[in-house]
Image (tube, rainbow, N blue to C red):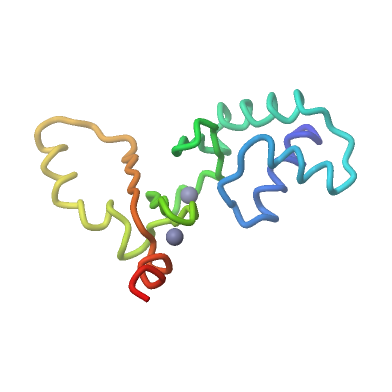
Length: 133
Ligand SMILES: [Zn+2]
Ligand SMILES: [Zn+2]
């Protein structure tokens, strides 16, 4: 691991794998007084995606966001159209959990599923509450 790769991965670990854009990773490193160039950060992130450490995500804003690849707990995303917060659907809310039968049906028909990538948009529970008031 080169120090740059380590630094970038550390940002994701320290921020609890928030869905960061490359720009935010760069600003985080700068705020930590680390001497990196923007080009290096972008290049390092691309590399980490290729190496399978980070997953590239695209939500509404037209920028890529990234998160640590968590092989243990796959999750889908819910994006609130009101507050913009990105929620992770895990555990009982994970679509993979509910779709088990569907996935089994697909594989019985000969489809090999490597990844399920679902995005949901709408109002989050907090914003729903605010609206009702
Ligand atoms: Zn919301
Ligand atoms: Zn996520």
